[in-house]
Image (cartoon, rainbow, N blue to C red):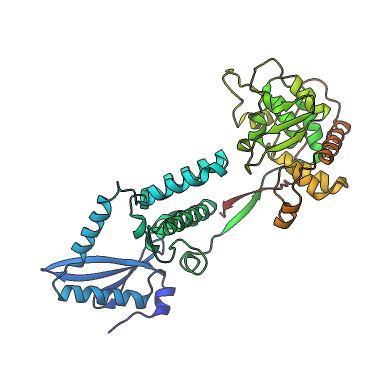
Length: 417
C-alpha cells in the first residue's frame, strides 16, 4: 500500500529516503533537491533506477512510471539495461548534424549579422560554458524538460540573470529546430505555463552603478587635467560626451568629422547595434586635439602603441585620483540626473544623447531622427555646467570629496546574499 501523500512530498525537507512502497522511493538531498528512484531486484541483483526530479515528476506520475517498469520486468526486460542502451545511442550520435550544438551554431550563424559583436560573444560564451557540456551532443529531437532542467538548476539561483538568458537561448534554438522540422511537440524550455512551475522563484538584489553628483563630476573633470596619458583624456571625453566605456576606449580617427563637428560611431561598436552621432562641443574637440599625431587610427593609444587603451584603463585613472564609489558608466547616470533636474531639455533628447532606445515602439516608429541639433545644445549646456562648477585646482592631485549615495540609469543584477 502506498505510504506517501502529495502534501508530504511537497513539504518534506529533511534529507533522507522515503518509501512509497513496491520499490518507489523519494530521495531528499542535503540541498533539499528531491528525486524519484525505482528499486527492483532482477537476477538476484538490486538495481536503483532514477525516474526524475520533483516537482517535474509528481507523486502520481512517479507511480505510473514505476508501474511501467514493473510491467517491463514481468516481461523479462531489464529497465536499467535498456536505459544504458539509450544513453549509448545518444552518445554515438554526437557527430551528427542534428545535435543541439549543431542547431545552436546554425541559429547563431543565421542571426549574428543583426547582432552586435558583444551580443554574439555572449551567446557563444553562455552556450559553451553552461549548455554544451550538458546537452550539446544530444539529438535536437530528443532534448526534453529534464535535460533543460539539468542545464538550468545549477545556475538558476546562483547567477539568475545568466540563467534566464540561457533558458531563453535554449528556447530560441529549439523553436528554430521545430521550424526546420527537426523536432516536434511543445518547447521544453518555454517559461510561461511550464518551467515557471518547475523552477523556484529567483531572489535578486538590484545594485546600481555608482555615480557622482553633477557638482562632484565637475570637480573630478578639473582634477583630470592634472594627469597625463591617453586614459585620462578618455575619461574626460567620456564625461563630456556621456558615451559608454567601450565606445570611448575604441574611438577611431576616421569616426571624427572635424568640419561638421560630429563623432560618428558605427553600429558594430554600439551596444544596440545602431549607428550613433555625437555632436562635438569645443571642450570635446580640445580633448581630441591633444591626441592628434599619436596614432593614425586609434584616438586613445595604449602604452605599448599596439592598439586602443584596454577596457579597464579609465577605471584605473579613477583609482589614481582616489575616487571611491565611482565607475566610468556612472557618469551617464550623473548626466541624466542633471538633465532631468536642472534643465528643461526634452526627455527624448536626453535619452538620445545616451543612445538609449525609446521605450514606446510607436514613438520609436514615428520618431526616426536623432535630434542632432537639439542634442548639440544639450551637450553644450552640459559642458558649460561642468566648466562653471569646476573648482580651481592647484598643486598635486588630491582626494575628491566623499561620495554621496550612488545613483544610476542602469543597474547590475546580482544574487541576494
